[in-house]
Length: 108
Image (cartoon, rainbow, N blue to C red; front, side, top):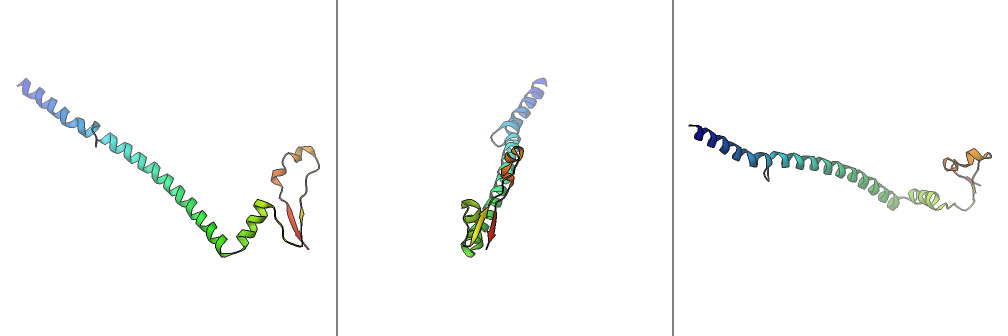
């Protein structure tokens, strides 16, 4: 009788092994679900970035305001009849924080 019980227990363990540790076992499913969640989070961030870039492309294609803004900010360009004025701080301690100042463009 003991042989039957031990053989049944061994058979039960042998059947459970693929369920828990096999190729399609619970541990693999858990790991794949975790990887899926991480990839979905990355995809949502990338889709937000793509939507922002698509908006930028639409603005650049449709109007001149976006092109003008980029030319001013990225290349420091000004229109005819405008003067570029940049005010720097007097004291040396504030001179290190010039990055916080924005140049002003004055129209005539």
